[in-house]
Image (cartoon, rainbow over all chains, first blue to last red; front, side, top):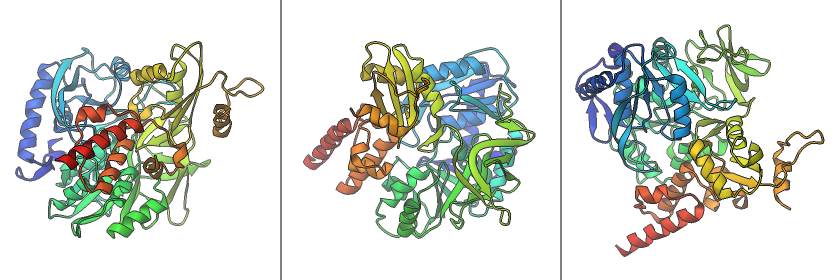
Length: 449
Length: 69
């Protein structure tokens, strides 16, 4: 790991928070954290669960886990205790790293964390993967996705061969969470490997992003999700920003009007990336020349099978699940509808084939939300649909207030997975054969008397 | 509500009153752009915001406080 991530000069700055953290300092912090993890019970072949918000503590403990020969289980800090307990019981880490104290606030991108390491189980990791991530699952609990060290290193190298990424000596203004694949590999790991400074803005606002760009002289690439394009497009820069090279986003499709508003204001390319937790970056259009299509990343093959995009992926990334409809014979079935142009090889993604939606770049499976609502005490039936936002229609089984429902859900589902609109109905609309109706129009009219 | 409608590209009448951290960030951003001033809101105040009405109360208090100072 040291050769891939810690090569380079000891005084090179890796992170600006905004205090600079150079390679030697990071190395020293990682070594100290490694001691803490091993004395708490982490051994080679075991796992450490990191339940940390984006922070220096997260970066340090992640790298320390790998240096100790362990598997890192990345738990989004927004997950509820209920969701975390389920994940821990299933993944049996030897230690859990969680904040003792956090400073900052809801709009901070990077927070100050004092972490505590606690012993959890005395078992080896459930798989040989270097990193485990959870993705909202279609059958109740979260899907468990593993990436091997070799696979992560291959993705980092893939980034170095993509035209339009930040180059050594440049900066990445980092907006996506480093717990998820874009921020983790495209930001953190690529940045450490290539000698690109990572600069999280002081907080989540357009002004703070522009301030981060203007705080240095070297070229800067803003990495984010489509929500961040809107933030920048609606911010008036105080003066010219010659350092800004481009903005690149991953996550979901960007409406053409938003893309235009951004390029009109800043006059730099708006790049687009397509990737998945399972394989990392799949394709890019970093010059904004093929929007909405993307070109497959070096070494990645994409093909279309029956309207679905399949991506080359040598081994199944799923832990404890062998579902041939998700992965078979070296191909990941993305569940994204799309086409591959025979002549140019360009890939066009046309949306999901299943019940997965994207909330601010986070994938949420509506089936997971619906199952969680439906199994609550006091709920007879529930339908969860996407209607501009996650919308739940609930048929109570006796007296149930919206407030109670809200409280119960807040205990079980991370904020980004929770319904934005809740409707309580005496009877949910059903078909003549008694099946729940899922059409948004029918559900809407059931609410308005 | 109109500000949130801009984010979701939905008519203001259909915007949900409940807001998450992303909608909240968007509202803070737009209010700051409009008033050309930074809202100094504490972590606790932000954490307590669940609806658009909660947000308005906090924003108003912050704008009034900074106008006094």
